[in-house]
Length: 381
Image (cartoon, rainbow, N blue to C red; front, side, top):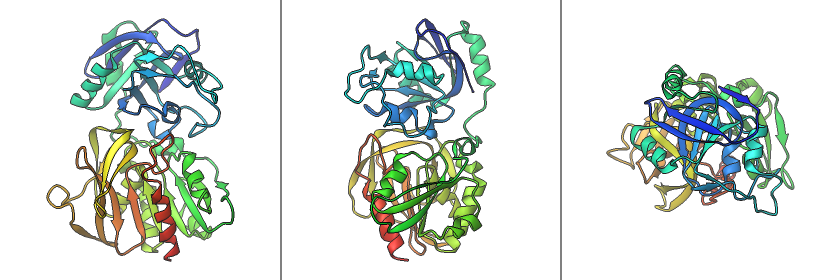
């Protein structure tokens, strides 16, 4: 819920959390008030990609980097057609935008898109609070002065658990991203909140990408004669995604090559019979260490998720192979910070997934090879 009132920037602003913790600062962006789940992002760069990532729908994003806005904004780095964050929290907005690609300032973009934000608060204290107490509902307001009143309204707002949000960010109409060079394969990408760089990354490998709405039926998908199907990132609770999970199960039954990332990874887990759960504060940033359980290699990866896949034996045996309705499944990747499942690999059907973002704009690019793995999987058909 975002209720912007377009006025000149600046002036006092108030941030409150559902447990009553309050921060006073300066308005940064549009005036008004906004409600959402407060989460923190540890990336030092890529704020424009963060703002326009649909996975942040209905979330108030706290940037841990002390200064934001140094390079301004441009017309090329957006990951979607608009800013999706519900609110924005920064410590020190840069007074200048210095980059040869810049076409404007960050605050002016926030005002244009009606994004209510706050600056000048102790984001380190706020981040420590969220890490200790967990991500929670919050509000930013430039119109309400009473913290108690605003806190009451925060506690009346909906929670992220049980929130079905992918239908609010999916494309309304199918579209095609043409391959660069000769087409090698055709992929149907289920848009659950897809980022622009994802089909772009596949197109560089000669893949013709058909991006379709999250409600697309199995009959429509199969009619496109795909060599593979991709399930994208997206916002909300994966337990609410009944249709996409059903679609994934149909594809597994037909042994259509399947690749899922982030929200798509969680949906594959549910399709295989695993549960999902909400993390205490999630993984958000471009510096998350993940171990490949097969090679032992550690990759630095880009994340944006607050839910994770449950695995019945991960805490006792990382190398265990689980029998499912669709055959054997193993954990392919694990987060080194908290032992969360970061990847699944099916051994008897052509499907795999990772919790992170191999397209990773603005980086890192350690996991870009996973698109080559998808290419190889389709070549094994």
